[in-house]
Amino acid sequence: MTALPVTFSDDQASAYDSIAEMLRGAGVDIEEGMLTPAREGGSGVMAVTGKAGSGKTLLLAELYRALAEAGMEVVSGDYESRKRRDKRTLAILAPTNKAASVLRLRGVPATTIHRILYTPVYDPEYERIAEWLAGEGERPVVEGLTDEALERAAAFFKLNKSMPGALAAAGLRGSDFITGWKRREEPLDIGFVDESSMLDDRQFEDLQEIFPNLLLFGDPAQLAPVNQSGKMVFDALPAPRQLNLSRIHRQDADNPILDLAHALADPALEFQDFERMVEDTARRDERVVWGQRVEVDLMARSPVLVWRNATRIRLISAFRRVYGAPEDALLEGEPLICDGIELPLKHRKKRLDLEARGLIKGAQVVYLGPGRKPGFSRLHVMGAEDPQVSAASIVKIEKPDEEEPFIPFAARMGATFLHGAACTIHKAQGSQWETVQVFAPDLFVAARMGRIEAGQPLWKRLAYVAITRAQERLIWVVRNRLSKPQHPLRVDDLRVAPSALVLEGEEI
Image 1: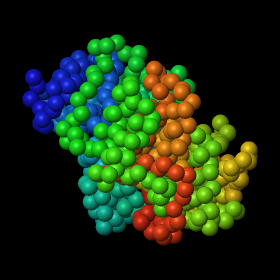
Image 2: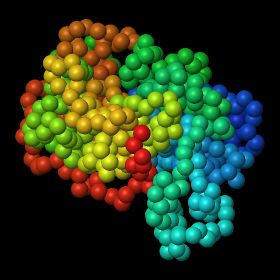
Image 3: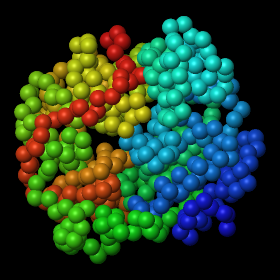
Image 4: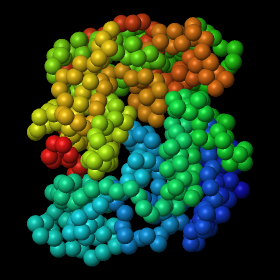
Protein backbone atom coordinates (compact mmCIF):
# COMPACT_ATOMS: atom_id res chain seq x y z
CA MET A 1 0.00 0.00 0.00
CA THR A 2 1.29 3.49 -0.84
CA ALA A 3 2.73 5.47 2.06
CA LEU A 4 0.22 8.26 2.76
CA PRO A 5 0.60 11.57 4.65
CA VAL A 6 -2.76 11.13 6.42
CA THR A 7 -4.68 8.18 7.77
CA PHE A 8 -7.23 7.13 5.16
CA SER A 9 -10.08 4.71 5.45
CA ASP A 10 -9.62 1.51 3.44
CA ASP A 11 -11.71 2.70 0.50
CA GLN A 12 -9.91 6.06 0.41
CA ALA A 13 -6.52 4.33 0.43
CA SER A 14 -7.62 1.96 -2.34
CA ALA A 15 -8.88 4.90 -4.43
CA TYR A 16 -5.61 6.78 -3.83
CA ASP A 17 -3.61 3.82 -5.13
CA SER A 18 -5.83 3.41 -8.21
CA ILE A 19 -5.44 7.10 -9.03
CA ALA A 20 -1.68 6.89 -8.47
CA GLU A 21 -1.56 4.07 -11.01
CA MET A 22 -3.55 6.15 -13.49
CA LEU A 23 -1.18 9.09 -13.00
CA ARG A 24 1.86 6.86 -13.53
CA GLY A 25 0.37 6.02 -16.91
CA ALA A 26 0.39 9.77 -17.59
CA GLY A 27 4.04 10.13 -16.57
CA VAL A 28 3.45 11.40 -13.03
CA ASP A 29 4.71 9.24 -10.16
CA ILE A 30 3.37 10.71 -6.92
CA GLU A 31 4.87 7.90 -4.86
CA GLU A 32 8.43 8.73 -5.97
CA GLY A 33 7.76 12.44 -6.62
CA MET A 34 8.92 12.17 -10.23
CA LEU A 35 7.66 13.69 -13.47
CA THR A 36 8.36 12.59 -17.02
CA PRO A 37 7.25 14.29 -20.25
CA ALA A 38 3.54 14.14 -21.01
CA ARG A 39 2.46 11.08 -23.01
CA GLU A 40 0.34 11.45 -26.09
CA GLY A 41 -3.28 10.53 -25.47
CA GLY A 42 -3.01 10.64 -21.67
CA SER A 43 -4.80 8.20 -19.37
CA GLY A 44 -8.39 9.28 -19.91
CA VAL A 45 -11.07 9.85 -17.28
CA MET A 46 -11.56 8.42 -13.80
CA ALA A 47 -14.24 9.28 -11.23
CA VAL A 48 -14.28 9.24 -7.43
CA THR A 49 -17.88 9.01 -6.24
CA GLY A 50 -19.42 8.95 -2.80
CA LYS A 51 -22.08 10.57 -0.68
CA ALA A 52 -21.50 13.57 1.57
CA GLY A 53 -18.98 12.82 4.31
CA SER A 54 -17.30 9.93 2.51
CA GLY A 55 -13.98 11.80 2.22
CA LYS A 56 -13.89 12.92 -1.43
CA THR A 57 -12.61 16.40 -0.58
CA LEU A 58 -9.91 15.06 1.75
CA LEU A 59 -8.74 12.70 -1.00
CA LEU A 60 -8.71 15.52 -3.55
CA ALA A 61 -6.68 17.73 -1.21
CA GLU A 62 -4.09 15.03 -0.54
CA LEU A 63 -3.73 14.25 -4.24
CA TYR A 64 -3.23 17.96 -4.95
CA ARG A 65 -0.48 18.18 -2.33
CA ALA A 66 1.26 15.09 -3.69
CA LEU A 67 1.19 16.46 -7.24
CA ALA A 68 2.44 19.87 -6.11
CA GLU A 69 5.30 18.24 -4.20
CA ALA A 70 6.17 16.24 -7.32
CA GLY A 71 6.63 19.52 -9.20
CA MET A 72 3.34 19.95 -11.06
CA GLU A 73 2.58 23.56 -11.99
CA VAL A 74 -0.82 24.51 -10.57
CA VAL A 75 -2.78 26.67 -13.02
CA SER A 76 -5.13 29.11 -11.31
CA GLY A 77 -6.88 30.65 -14.30
CA ASP A 78 -5.86 34.24 -13.59
CA TYR A 79 -2.36 34.11 -15.10
CA GLU A 80 -0.09 31.68 -16.93
CA SER A 81 3.55 32.30 -17.61
CA ARG A 82 4.52 31.79 -21.25
CA LYS A 83 7.93 30.68 -20.02
CA ARG A 84 6.46 27.60 -18.34
CA ARG A 85 4.73 25.97 -21.26
CA ASP A 86 7.01 22.93 -20.92
CA LYS A 87 5.94 22.31 -17.31
CA ARG A 88 3.52 19.54 -16.32
CA THR A 89 0.31 21.26 -15.27
CA LEU A 90 -2.58 20.67 -12.88
CA ALA A 91 -5.86 22.60 -12.59
CA ILE A 92 -8.44 22.10 -9.85
CA LEU A 93 -11.91 23.13 -10.96
CA ALA A 94 -15.46 23.54 -9.70
CA PRO A 95 -18.63 24.48 -11.60
CA THR A 96 -19.45 27.50 -9.40
CA ASN A 97 -17.66 30.27 -7.50
CA LYS A 98 -19.06 29.01 -4.21
CA ALA A 99 -17.88 25.44 -4.79
CA ALA A 100 -14.41 26.70 -5.71
CA SER A 101 -14.30 28.90 -2.59
CA VAL A 102 -15.11 25.88 -0.36
CA LEU A 103 -11.98 24.17 -1.70
CA ARG A 104 -9.86 27.31 -1.34
CA LEU A 105 -10.85 27.51 2.34
CA ARG A 106 -9.31 24.03 2.69
CA GLY A 107 -6.05 25.23 1.15
CA VAL A 108 -6.73 23.86 -2.34
CA PRO A 109 -6.20 26.49 -5.09
CA ALA A 110 -9.41 25.87 -7.00
CA THR A 111 -10.96 28.01 -9.70
CA THR A 112 -14.08 27.82 -11.85
CA ILE A 113 -14.32 25.80 -15.04
CA HIS A 114 -14.91 28.98 -17.01
CA ARG A 115 -11.67 30.55 -15.78
CA ILE A 116 -9.78 27.61 -17.26
CA LEU A 117 -11.66 27.51 -20.55
CA TYR A 118 -10.74 31.17 -21.15
CA THR A 119 -7.37 32.74 -20.38
CA PRO A 120 -6.54 36.41 -19.74
CA VAL A 121 -4.45 38.45 -22.19
CA TYR A 122 -2.05 40.72 -20.29
CA ASP A 123 -0.64 44.01 -21.46
CA PRO A 124 3.07 43.33 -22.22
CA GLU A 125 4.22 46.20 -19.98
CA TYR A 126 2.48 44.80 -16.91
CA GLU A 127 3.10 41.18 -17.86
CA ARG A 128 6.73 41.82 -16.87
CA ILE A 129 5.51 42.38 -13.29
CA ALA A 130 3.57 39.12 -13.43
CA GLU A 131 6.63 37.23 -14.70
CA TRP A 132 8.70 38.66 -11.85
CA LEU A 133 6.09 37.76 -9.24
CA ALA A 134 5.91 34.23 -10.66
CA GLY A 135 9.70 33.88 -10.34
CA GLU A 136 10.28 33.82 -14.08
CA GLY A 137 11.81 37.23 -14.68
CA GLU A 138 13.90 40.08 -13.31
CA ARG A 139 12.40 42.81 -11.14
CA PRO A 140 10.97 45.25 -13.67
CA VAL A 141 11.06 49.02 -13.84
CA VAL A 142 7.61 50.21 -14.85
CA GLU A 143 6.75 53.83 -15.45
CA GLY A 144 4.30 55.12 -12.87
CA LEU A 145 4.94 52.34 -10.32
CA THR A 146 7.18 52.94 -7.32
CA ASP A 147 9.36 50.39 -5.55
CA GLU A 148 6.86 50.52 -2.68
CA ALA A 149 4.04 49.57 -5.04
CA LEU A 150 6.01 46.60 -6.36
CA GLU A 151 6.77 45.48 -2.81
CA ARG A 152 3.05 45.61 -1.96
CA ALA A 153 2.37 43.44 -4.99
CA ALA A 154 5.07 40.94 -3.98
CA ALA A 155 3.81 40.74 -0.40
CA PHE A 156 0.24 40.16 -1.56
CA PHE A 157 1.23 37.47 -4.08
CA LYS A 158 3.34 35.64 -1.50
CA LEU A 159 0.30 35.24 0.74
CA ASN A 160 -2.54 34.86 -1.76
CA LYS A 161 -1.09 33.62 -5.08
CA SER A 162 -3.58 35.80 -6.99
CA MET A 163 -1.94 37.72 -9.81
CA PRO A 164 -4.83 40.19 -10.36
CA GLY A 165 -5.00 40.78 -6.62
CA ALA A 166 -1.24 41.43 -6.47
CA LEU A 167 -1.38 43.92 -9.33
CA ALA A 168 -4.36 45.61 -7.69
CA ALA A 169 -2.27 45.92 -4.51
CA ALA A 170 0.25 47.83 -6.62
CA GLY A 171 -2.48 50.32 -7.53
CA LEU A 172 -3.49 48.95 -10.94
CA ARG A 173 -6.98 48.24 -12.21
CA GLY A 174 -8.00 45.20 -14.23
CA SER A 175 -8.48 47.39 -17.27
CA ASP A 176 -4.82 48.47 -16.97
CA PHE A 177 -3.24 45.03 -17.24
CA ILE A 178 -5.86 42.61 -18.64
CA THR A 179 -6.68 43.61 -22.20
CA GLY A 180 -9.11 40.77 -22.92
CA TRP A 181 -9.85 37.05 -22.73
CA LYS A 182 -9.44 34.28 -25.26
CA ARG A 183 -10.43 30.64 -25.58
CA ARG A 184 -7.63 28.43 -24.29
CA GLU A 185 -5.39 27.29 -27.11
CA GLU A 186 -2.86 25.17 -25.24
CA PRO A 187 -4.07 22.01 -23.47
CA LEU A 188 -3.20 21.27 -19.85
CA ASP A 189 -2.15 17.94 -18.32
CA ILE A 190 -4.33 16.95 -15.39
CA GLY A 191 -7.68 18.30 -14.27
CA PHE A 192 -9.51 17.63 -11.00
CA VAL A 193 -13.22 18.54 -11.13
CA ASP A 194 -15.14 18.80 -7.86
CA GLU A 195 -18.98 18.69 -7.79
CA SER A 196 -18.86 16.87 -11.14
CA SER A 197 -22.47 15.72 -10.70
CA MET A 198 -23.34 19.20 -11.99
CA LEU A 199 -21.55 18.76 -15.33
CA ASP A 200 -23.59 18.42 -18.49
CA ASP A 201 -22.36 16.65 -21.62
CA ARG A 202 -21.22 19.87 -23.31
CA GLN A 203 -19.06 20.95 -20.35
CA PHE A 204 -17.63 17.44 -20.10
CA GLU A 205 -16.65 17.50 -23.79
CA ASP A 206 -15.00 20.91 -23.33
CA LEU A 207 -12.95 19.61 -20.42
CA GLN A 208 -11.87 16.49 -22.31
CA GLU A 209 -10.54 18.72 -25.10
CA ILE A 210 -8.29 20.48 -22.59
CA PHE A 211 -7.30 17.67 -20.23
CA PRO A 212 -6.02 14.28 -21.48
CA ASN A 213 -6.12 13.20 -17.81
CA LEU A 214 -9.32 14.05 -15.98
CA LEU A 215 -10.34 13.07 -12.45
CA LEU A 216 -13.97 13.70 -11.49
CA PHE A 217 -15.21 13.95 -7.89
CA GLY A 218 -18.97 13.66 -7.53
CA ASP A 219 -21.92 12.61 -5.42
CA PRO A 220 -24.24 10.16 -7.24
CA ALA A 221 -27.09 11.03 -4.85
CA GLN A 222 -27.27 14.63 -6.09
CA LEU A 223 -29.74 15.88 -8.67
CA ALA A 224 -28.53 15.43 -12.24
CA PRO A 225 -28.43 18.47 -14.57
CA VAL A 226 -31.90 19.23 -15.90
CA ASN A 227 -30.98 18.28 -19.49
CA GLN A 228 -29.32 14.98 -18.60
CA SER A 229 -32.39 12.73 -18.08
CA GLY A 230 -31.33 11.85 -14.55
CA LYS A 231 -27.82 10.76 -15.64
CA MET A 232 -24.46 12.16 -14.60
CA VAL A 233 -21.41 12.25 -16.85
CA PHE A 234 -19.50 9.71 -14.74
CA ASP A 235 -22.35 7.17 -14.95
CA ALA A 236 -21.14 6.10 -18.41
CA LEU A 237 -17.59 5.29 -17.25
CA PRO A 238 -16.67 1.58 -17.06
CA ALA A 239 -16.66 0.08 -13.57
CA PRO A 240 -12.84 0.07 -13.12
CA ARG A 241 -12.88 3.81 -13.77
CA GLN A 242 -15.44 4.51 -11.04
CA LEU A 243 -14.00 4.51 -7.53
CA ASN A 244 -16.74 4.60 -4.92
CA LEU A 245 -16.18 5.76 -1.35
CA SER A 246 -18.82 4.11 0.78
CA ARG A 247 -17.61 4.78 4.31
CA ILE A 248 -18.48 7.93 6.22
CA HIS A 249 -15.14 9.42 7.22
CA ARG A 250 -14.66 9.32 10.94
CA GLN A 251 -14.13 13.07 11.38
CA ASP A 252 -17.72 13.58 10.13
CA ALA A 253 -19.17 10.60 12.00
CA ASP A 254 -20.84 12.70 14.72
CA ASN A 255 -22.44 15.15 12.30
CA PRO A 256 -26.25 15.02 12.75
CA ILE A 257 -26.80 16.77 9.40
CA LEU A 258 -24.95 14.02 7.53
CA ASP A 259 -26.75 11.39 9.61
CA LEU A 260 -30.07 12.76 8.34
CA ALA A 261 -28.81 12.90 4.76
CA HIS A 262 -27.69 9.27 4.80
CA ALA A 263 -30.90 8.11 6.46
CA LEU A 264 -32.67 9.02 3.22
CA ALA A 265 -31.07 5.98 1.56
CA ASP A 266 -33.48 3.69 3.46
CA PRO A 267 -36.05 2.63 0.83
CA ALA A 268 -38.69 2.08 3.53
CA LEU A 269 -38.41 5.62 4.90
CA GLU A 270 -41.51 7.75 4.30
CA PHE A 271 -41.67 11.54 4.46
CA GLN A 272 -43.55 11.62 7.77
CA ASP A 273 -41.00 9.24 9.33
CA PHE A 274 -38.16 11.45 8.13
CA GLU A 275 -39.73 14.56 9.62
CA ARG A 276 -40.06 12.83 12.98
CA MET A 277 -36.36 11.95 12.67
CA VAL A 278 -35.52 15.62 12.04
CA GLU A 279 -37.64 16.71 15.01
CA ASP A 280 -36.04 14.15 17.31
CA THR A 281 -32.55 15.20 16.19
CA ALA A 282 -33.38 18.87 16.81
CA ARG A 283 -34.32 18.09 20.44
CA ARG A 284 -30.88 16.72 21.24
CA ASP A 285 -28.53 18.64 18.93
CA GLU A 286 -28.50 22.39 18.36
CA ARG A 287 -27.00 21.93 14.89
CA VAL A 288 -30.45 20.88 13.66
CA VAL A 289 -33.40 23.23 14.20
CA TRP A 290 -37.12 22.43 13.87
CA GLY A 291 -38.12 25.83 12.51
CA GLN A 292 -41.60 27.29 12.92
CA ARG A 293 -40.82 30.16 10.52
CA VAL A 294 -38.29 31.29 7.95
CA GLU A 295 -35.54 33.39 9.56
CA VAL A 296 -35.57 36.47 7.32
CA ASP A 297 -32.17 37.80 8.42
CA LEU A 298 -30.47 34.69 7.04
CA MET A 299 -32.07 35.10 3.61
CA ALA A 300 -29.77 37.99 2.67
CA ARG A 301 -26.73 35.73 2.55
CA SER A 302 -28.12 32.18 2.60
CA PRO A 303 -31.20 31.67 0.41
CA VAL A 304 -34.13 29.57 1.57
CA LEU A 305 -34.05 26.33 -0.44
CA VAL A 306 -37.34 25.39 -2.08
CA TRP A 307 -38.58 23.02 -4.76
CA ARG A 308 -41.29 25.05 -6.50
CA ASN A 309 -40.76 28.35 -8.31
CA ALA A 310 -44.07 29.65 -6.95
CA THR A 311 -42.77 29.18 -3.39
CA ARG A 312 -39.50 30.91 -4.29
CA ILE A 313 -41.34 33.96 -5.66
CA ARG A 314 -43.67 34.22 -2.63
CA LEU A 315 -40.75 34.11 -0.20
CA ILE A 316 -38.83 36.74 -2.16
CA SER A 317 -41.85 39.06 -2.18
CA ALA A 318 -42.26 38.59 1.58
CA PHE A 319 -38.53 39.27 2.14
CA ARG A 320 -38.68 42.57 0.22
CA ARG A 321 -41.88 43.56 1.98
CA VAL A 322 -40.56 43.12 5.52
CA TYR A 323 -37.44 45.15 4.70
CA GLY A 324 -39.52 47.91 3.11
CA ALA A 325 -37.85 47.61 -0.29
CA PRO A 326 -39.33 50.02 -2.85
CA GLU A 327 -40.77 48.59 -6.05
CA ASP A 328 -38.62 50.80 -8.28
CA ALA A 329 -35.23 50.19 -6.67
CA LEU A 330 -33.04 47.72 -4.83
CA LEU A 331 -31.80 48.21 -1.29
CA GLU A 332 -28.10 47.88 -0.62
CA GLY A 333 -27.55 44.37 0.71
CA GLU A 334 -30.30 42.64 -1.31
CA PRO A 335 -29.10 39.25 -2.66
CA LEU A 336 -29.21 38.44 -6.37
CA ILE A 337 -28.50 35.38 -8.51
CA CYS A 338 -26.99 35.76 -11.98
CA ASP A 339 -29.39 34.31 -14.54
CA GLY A 340 -27.11 34.66 -17.55
CA ILE A 341 -25.67 37.33 -19.81
CA GLU A 342 -27.70 39.05 -22.50
CA LEU A 343 -25.21 40.21 -25.09
CA PRO A 344 -25.17 39.77 -28.88
CA LEU A 345 -22.45 37.67 -30.49
CA LYS A 346 -20.52 40.74 -31.62
CA HIS A 347 -19.89 41.56 -27.94
CA ARG A 348 -18.26 38.20 -27.21
CA LYS A 349 -15.25 39.90 -25.58
CA LYS A 350 -17.47 41.77 -23.16
CA ARG A 351 -19.26 38.51 -22.31
CA LEU A 352 -15.93 36.87 -21.51
CA ASP A 353 -14.99 39.84 -19.33
CA LEU A 354 -18.18 39.43 -17.31
CA GLU A 355 -17.90 35.67 -16.95
CA ALA A 356 -14.21 35.79 -16.07
CA ARG A 357 -15.03 38.21 -13.27
CA GLY A 358 -17.30 35.60 -11.71
CA LEU A 359 -20.66 36.58 -13.20
CA ILE A 360 -21.42 33.15 -14.54
CA LYS A 361 -24.94 31.75 -14.55
CA GLY A 362 -25.91 30.81 -11.02
CA ALA A 363 -23.40 33.15 -9.32
CA GLN A 364 -24.68 34.59 -6.05
CA VAL A 365 -24.07 38.29 -5.54
CA VAL A 366 -24.98 41.04 -3.08
CA TYR A 367 -26.11 44.39 -4.45
CA LEU A 368 -23.86 47.19 -3.13
CA GLY A 369 -25.51 50.12 -4.88
CA PRO A 370 -25.73 51.82 -8.28
CA GLY A 371 -22.67 52.18 -10.45
CA ARG A 372 -21.31 55.43 -11.87
CA LYS A 373 -23.24 54.96 -15.11
CA PRO A 374 -26.99 54.50 -15.57
CA GLY A 375 -27.93 50.81 -15.52
CA PHE A 376 -24.70 49.74 -13.83
CA SER A 377 -24.59 48.03 -10.43
CA ARG A 378 -21.83 47.58 -7.90
CA LEU A 379 -21.83 43.94 -6.84
CA HIS A 380 -20.09 41.56 -4.45
CA VAL A 381 -19.74 38.12 -6.05
CA MET A 382 -19.94 35.53 -3.27
CA GLY A 383 -17.07 33.06 -3.36
CA ALA A 384 -15.14 34.83 -6.14
CA GLU A 385 -11.42 35.38 -5.69
CA ASP A 386 -11.80 39.07 -6.58
CA PRO A 387 -15.37 39.64 -5.43
CA GLN A 388 -16.23 43.28 -6.09
CA VAL A 389 -17.18 44.26 -9.62
CA SER A 390 -19.34 46.78 -11.40
CA ALA A 391 -21.40 45.64 -14.35
CA ALA A 392 -24.22 46.65 -16.66
CA SER A 393 -27.20 44.90 -15.06
CA ILE A 394 -30.71 43.81 -15.86
CA VAL A 395 -32.50 43.02 -12.59
CA LYS A 396 -35.80 41.10 -12.69
CA ILE A 397 -38.05 40.96 -9.66
CA GLU A 398 -40.70 38.26 -10.03
CA LYS A 399 -44.04 38.71 -8.30
CA PRO A 400 -46.69 36.19 -7.26
CA ASP A 401 -49.43 35.59 -9.83
CA GLU A 402 -47.80 37.84 -12.42
CA GLU A 403 -46.37 36.33 -15.59
CA GLU A 404 -43.91 39.10 -16.36
CA PRO A 405 -41.22 40.11 -13.84
CA PHE A 406 -40.92 43.71 -12.67
CA ILE A 407 -37.65 45.35 -13.73
CA PRO A 408 -36.71 48.15 -11.31
CA PHE A 409 -33.86 49.28 -13.55
CA ALA A 410 -31.84 47.91 -16.42
CA ALA A 411 -29.02 48.60 -18.80
CA ARG A 412 -29.72 47.98 -22.45
CA MET A 413 -27.79 44.72 -22.16
CA GLY A 414 -25.44 42.99 -19.75
CA ALA A 415 -25.67 40.54 -16.83
CA THR A 416 -29.21 39.53 -15.86
CA PHE A 417 -30.19 38.85 -12.27
CA LEU A 418 -33.05 37.30 -10.34
CA HIS A 419 -33.59 37.95 -6.66
CA GLY A 420 -31.63 35.61 -4.42
CA ALA A 421 -33.43 35.54 -1.07
CA ALA A 422 -34.74 32.10 -2.04
CA CYS A 423 -33.65 29.66 -4.70
CA THR A 424 -34.55 26.23 -5.95
CA ILE A 425 -32.69 23.21 -4.66
CA HIS A 426 -31.55 22.45 -8.21
CA LYS A 427 -29.78 25.82 -8.44
CA ALA A 428 -28.26 25.41 -4.97
CA GLN A 429 -26.15 22.43 -6.03
CA GLY A 430 -22.44 23.12 -5.77
CA SER A 431 -22.94 25.74 -3.05
CA GLN A 432 -22.65 25.50 0.70
CA TRP A 433 -23.58 27.89 3.47
CA GLU A 434 -22.84 27.84 7.18
CA THR A 435 -26.59 27.77 7.94
CA VAL A 436 -29.19 26.47 5.50
CA GLN A 437 -32.98 26.80 5.69
CA VAL A 438 -34.97 24.10 3.89
CA PHE A 439 -38.63 24.84 3.20
CA ALA A 440 -40.16 21.50 4.17
CA PRO A 441 -43.74 22.14 2.94
CA ASP A 442 -42.41 22.05 -0.63
CA LEU A 443 -40.82 18.65 -0.06
CA PHE A 444 -44.07 17.40 1.42
CA VAL A 445 -45.79 18.34 -1.85
CA ALA A 446 -43.11 16.45 -3.81
CA ALA A 447 -43.66 13.41 -1.59
CA ARG A 448 -47.46 13.57 -2.09
CA MET A 449 -46.97 13.63 -5.87
CA GLY A 450 -44.99 10.36 -5.73
CA ARG A 451 -42.52 11.37 -8.44
CA ILE A 452 -39.49 9.11 -9.06
CA GLU A 453 -36.13 10.28 -10.43
CA ALA A 454 -33.29 7.87 -11.28
CA GLY A 455 -35.04 5.11 -9.34
CA GLN A 456 -35.51 7.11 -6.13
CA PRO A 457 -38.43 9.20 -4.83
CA LEU A 458 -37.84 12.78 -5.91
CA TRP A 459 -38.48 14.18 -2.43
CA LYS A 460 -35.56 12.14 -1.08
CA ARG A 461 -33.16 13.43 -3.72
CA LEU A 462 -34.35 16.98 -3.08
CA ALA A 463 -34.01 16.57 0.69
CA TYR A 464 -30.54 15.04 0.35
CA VAL A 465 -29.22 17.88 -1.80
CA ALA A 466 -30.80 20.58 0.37
CA ILE A 467 -29.55 19.10 3.65
CA THR A 468 -25.98 18.63 2.43
CA ARG A 469 -25.73 22.34 1.53
CA ALA A 470 -25.45 23.06 5.28
CA GLN A 471 -21.94 23.22 6.69
CA GLU A 472 -22.73 23.85 10.36
CA ARG A 473 -26.47 24.26 10.96
CA LEU A 474 -29.70 23.05 9.35
CA ILE A 475 -33.08 24.72 9.86
CA TRP A 476 -35.97 22.51 8.73
CA VAL A 477 -38.77 25.05 8.26
CA VAL A 478 -42.20 23.46 8.71
CA ARG A 479 -44.56 26.44 8.45
CA ASN A 480 -45.20 29.09 5.83
CA ARG A 481 -44.26 32.00 8.07
CA LEU A 482 -41.58 34.68 8.01
CA SER A 483 -39.88 36.18 11.05
CA LYS A 484 -39.36 39.90 11.54
CA PRO A 485 -35.83 41.17 10.73
CA GLN A 486 -33.58 41.80 13.71
CA HIS A 487 -31.46 44.39 11.87
CA PRO A 488 -31.45 46.25 8.53
CA LEU A 489 -29.77 44.80 5.46
CA ARG A 490 -26.03 45.33 5.70
CA VAL A 491 -23.05 45.55 3.37
CA ASP A 492 -20.40 46.91 5.73
CA ASP A 493 -18.88 43.46 6.17
CA LEU A 494 -18.39 43.24 2.40
CA ARG A 495 -16.56 46.53 2.05
CA VAL A 496 -13.07 45.64 0.85
CA ALA A 497 -10.46 47.34 -1.27
CA PRO A 498 -11.70 47.89 -4.84
CA SER A 499 -11.30 44.81 -6.99
CA ALA A 500 -8.61 44.58 -9.60
CA LEU A 501 -11.37 43.52 -11.94
CA VAL A 502 -13.69 46.47 -12.48
CA LEU A 503 -16.12 46.37 -15.35
CA GLU A 504 -17.36 49.91 -15.68
CA GLY A 505 -16.03 51.04 -19.01
CA GLU A 506 -18.23 52.22 -21.86
CA GLU A 507 -21.76 50.91 -21.71
CA ILE A 508 -22.53 48.68 -24.66
